[in-house]
Every structure is written in C-alpha cells, then in structure tokens.
Length: 317
Image 1: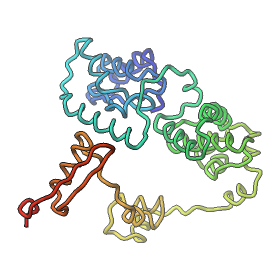
Image 2: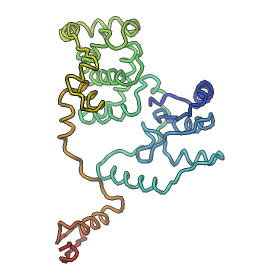
Image 3: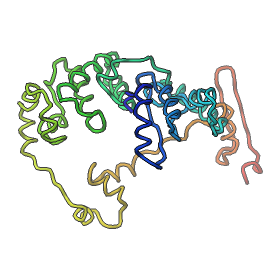
Image 4: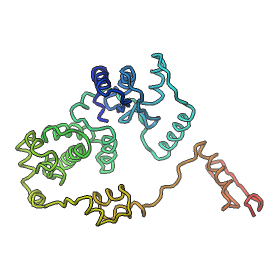
C-alpha cells in the first residue's frame, strides 16, 4: 500500500516467499505511488501469484492499484490467459467517470516515478486523504512541502513502520508542522503518547531523536497524558458492560470509538442514490416515468424541455 516495491525486489522476494508458504495460494496487492504498480503486478504473476488486485478506472492508478484493463492487456501480451469478463467492468468505468465529473472528484492517472516515496513512505490511501484534508484547510498547495516534512518527522520518530495508526501519527504531525510554521510547537496527543513509549515501547524510544522527544514532552499536555491511566478491560467485562446480545463488530466499535458510536452511525443521514448507469438525462427520465408517485413531470435544461403526463392506468389507478 506504500507503493515501495520495485520490479527487481518483486522478482527477488516473491519466489522465495511463495516457496516457503507451500500450498497456500498467493494474492498480490500493490499500489502505484512510485509509478511501478503495473510492472510489479506483471512480475508477481511471473513469480507464480494466482490473484492480482487491480482497480477499475477512474479509481485506478495514482495512489491506488493498477488498472484492471492495463494489467489484463499486459498479461495477455505475455501469453497468459486471463479469465475475466470485461464488459461489466466498462459499464462500471463509465458510471464512476460520470460520478467523478458530477462531484468534481479527481480521476486516477498513471503516476511518474517518484524517488521521494521511499523517504516519506506514506501509504496510497493516506496520501489521497492528506491531499483532501489540506485542501479543506485551505493549504492544498502545500502538499509537496508536507511530504518533505513527513520524511523529516519519520526520521525524528525513529523510522516507525508506516502503517495504521503510526503512519497517521507521522503524516498528521508533519501537516501540523507545516501549517503552524514551526516544528513541534503544536503536537497531537498521539505523538505525545508515542514519545511516552505507548506505541512500540522501549524499542521505539531507543530510535527516536532525544532532542525531539524532549521537546514533545516538555509541555503540560504531555505531563497530563503521562499521569493518565487508560482502562484495560477484559472481554468478559466489555460483554458485561455492553450486553451479550450485540455482535463482535458492535462490541469492538463501542469499546474503541465510544459508547454512542453505533447510534451515531445508525442515525447518520442516508446518501442519495447515485446517478443511473446510463446517460444521466435518459436515466432520469426513465426513473421518473416508472415512479408511480408523479403524474406530471416537466424538465427544462437550456434549450431542451421535456414534459410527461401519465394516465391513471400508467399510474396504477
């Protein structure tokens, strides 16, 4: 997900790992952050991987997985059989292209090779979220600066592995440093707890820059968190608190997010249905024509106007 693999490393590592795994079937999941995702997918198949994860454009490429169409074409050109029906995928691609255009979402495009990926190691999904959050904060033009700061924060913290939740700790702190304009003047609670040794213990602390750690902990909030004793309930205690009739998923959600988490999700407004799968205007007319609640419908767009009147028989009356 960090897009760190190269074709050379894929050729070197995968055959050894597949051999060591015995009869376990292999799947390959790689993102395109460094621009090498499609090449790695092909090398994975050459190494003996049975399943390669891909994405349908416009949700492919960029920080995502390689395009299913590109990977299929490359494998077929190399003589591999690909047992996949493409027709439904083209319909999916057309649908999401319309959604992206309607909502103003970016479309994934192949990325150029970026050596800086190996410095900050931000996972693909997190990078997309980071871009969006910086835009919401009005500093979308400072993404490159934030990526460079992420590499520095990662080094300061002793190179923690960039997976959830540590990658969020590093990336969020880098964004704070860039927006504030001074490093570690403001620090998130998560980074303070990391500096206290609560995410990785002594091994994490031994690799952390001692001056940075001292600056992070030299604040009232750090002393407050240091004194805080977090509850560590057993599974039996959680079941007693929340009841034995709820699912494991709801139990975990309540225990980690909070008592009202399930209610918040349940009461959240439902999203409106997406645009029809055909041409938007044709699909809208078709839906309105089949909807028994409307007897008279008038649409006007620019120089086009459409009027529909239904008889009682058409309305089921």
